[in-house]
Length: 175
Image (cartoon, rainbow, N blue to C red; front, side):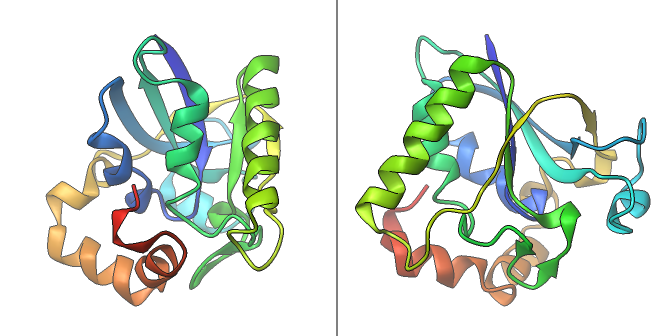
């Protein structure tokens, strides 16, 4: 089993896209990259802890490669905006790939280069690759939010502009 830690704006929207794929074992919403131990949601939202909202995905590398996981990841948010996502602004909502090792770092560089070469977005991908240092699971009410509050999740996804951005770049057959 391998681990990927990925930030792409609000972590509520970073769980559902991965659940449907074989090889994905678990997805936990949480906080990564900061300097405060065991931060709360309220602390992270101040943008003073250095954490980003992120998901930590356990996956079976023999079924789902890290590169394939990243190809799903890049269809879930706007990778050209590193100052937040849609109407959520600030460091805690900014995207990042937290590379757990050199192999993940190199895979991420390759996937980003492929996206830039394909000119899918009208600006270059601006999602940093950061060495992994920590991950703290979020409060229980944030876990699998799309299942716990589907109407609110859908309203958020649509109202924030995330859904229309994804459809405009990837069509209805996105992750």
